[in-house]
Image (cartoon, rainbow, N blue to C red; front, top):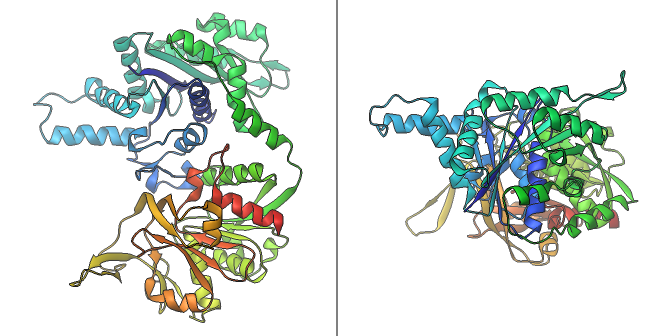
Length: 538
């Protein structure tokens, strides 16, 4: 039977509950326990798909096409587990399901209330998302005391009562601030946060205390005394230079041993050799290389979270200390490329809308003409096709119908697939009359031998995750190929262009999918590693 670990947060947000959940999952997995992870988000949006990355952070896409919270990216990077549609639930999703049932009369005339109907739906979805693994780790977004998260807190309280304390454990993450003027660590915020949690009916088994300085044993004992938690269960999560050290730090303090004892788990000893090797490679990096990312969303660390991590993974695994410099795409729209000088590599990531698109195109032109290694992702690939069409194929003002519905040369368009009378696949632009749907989730891609993509993956068939509406327009395939564009990857039915490359360039590749979503620190990702190696060797 699945055993549950619930992780809550207090005092302030952004303390790293997702990192703690992922790190704990990685440690338990190393003890040969199967692990699933769920994120419960208290916002009303049905999913993060329409939320601004600048405000909420990136939208992480699961293999089955769910648009989810960025914490699911952390889970997949630390744990050998593919998250899914059942791994992220929002308040909006929960209420939407309950209201639909009410409209269908499934509650038989009962008054529909938060308790028990909303909480029952939450519990049902938690059980569904556990996938009957040995351990299911559930992270509750927000902070204890927020009105938005109360139904989630009540649901996990009920599960503790239903299953008993041998099947359920509670971890509470809090802030222990250091007051510089007094030269003291203050435990009072943690005491109040636990008091708030206990008033709702949950006594935490473990406290993970985030701090910028080490918490002394005396302070740990003080926290334990005032929160009714064992002193050994007060874990210090200190600020670190690299988030992939967190599993080592938590294990060193015995977090997994406490969980194993509390939940009476039968498992092997912990083995974190892979994390130790990663840390050793990281601290031994010497060759520093700067690359430019042409961005359009602010809050770069969160808006491009998976991309940042994928580049870091590739650098460590290729022996290169990659330093990322973000460039605002809008600042490149006047064709002034001085911000790109001395670039060793350029990445143009995904996005939506026309803001900054001309700046991205100018950056791609700079990379092409100056022989700078280039990687275009999703919109970045489409911008590369537009730039090549305009400046090499002489298709003046070529564009995507996303940005110019009346462009004479729609090299990128909103394409609908249909079968004609002969059964062959045809396409037409449906931007203005029918509309389109997202291509989401993991899909198969066929690679051309001798391409850079094939050399990177060392396989003719790959699976990668998509999140976009617009596609390469096949009507322009031949003219672009004639001028030197390489179609290096296509969909499994060979009807959609997935990867483009250029002849006579050190390394120039654009992909329609998002490879950053499947990069892991231990293994990296073939495309990012090939990109970094091209910089290192060139």
